[in-house]
Length: 316
Image 1: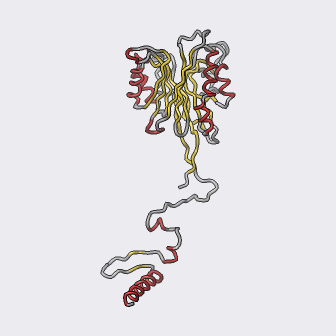
Image 2 (image 1 turned 90 degrees about the horizontal axis):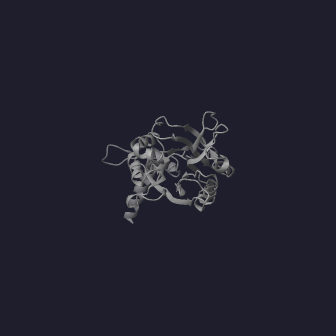
């Protein structure tokens, strides 16, 4: 009974100290511990000021919370076959200097060259061969995709090869594309045929592939980057490899838009970047040939596009 009374007395002492003085005084200590009044302790607001445990949500309940833009830079670059070997370090310098998260690279001569591009650019990557051969299965020729995994992570990769038709005059026995599905977006790196009907086959294959359809269904922006072997936005009579509508028009009809600066009357191109984005937030920030491009090391110039592909809400 005496023990109970002693404990009760201590409790009452502490209670009235908190209620009246807002403090607890401990005998033998020169300092005091500031405390909130008991009524304040019943509310969660202000706990972050005492303990630092609950962040302040300044926009909770706001009808227009702030948003953070998500940026993506993509490059397409045809390094022109054997020139890719002669100028491999210069090509790597251009890709690295373009400061992109993803690069689609065409006409890579052998896998060792691609491994060197990965090492020199400090990017991850995958390659697909369209002409077989080479020493010890190194592969003779193909194209690949590079990505900066420290920024965009590592994608799941799907490679698709399409044999040329019997009527084709294309120098490559096969053409191919690589589907790279990242967390927030998908990129298709490709190099189209020089034979127009085969470009239709390629376009239909891309649009109907289950992996691409999955990207659409997930609401992920989808990008096609590569040498489509058709000139776009060029003066009449300068079209490359026949009718330019073979691959571009079906893609545009399915919701893709060309991100290259086709409003510029001086731009005539076949190295294209296209986007299909169902997000409400999308914006082109930069586009054009990178300043670091060197016209003497390939018959193509690289093309770079930087976009805001979506905006995410910032709740804090």
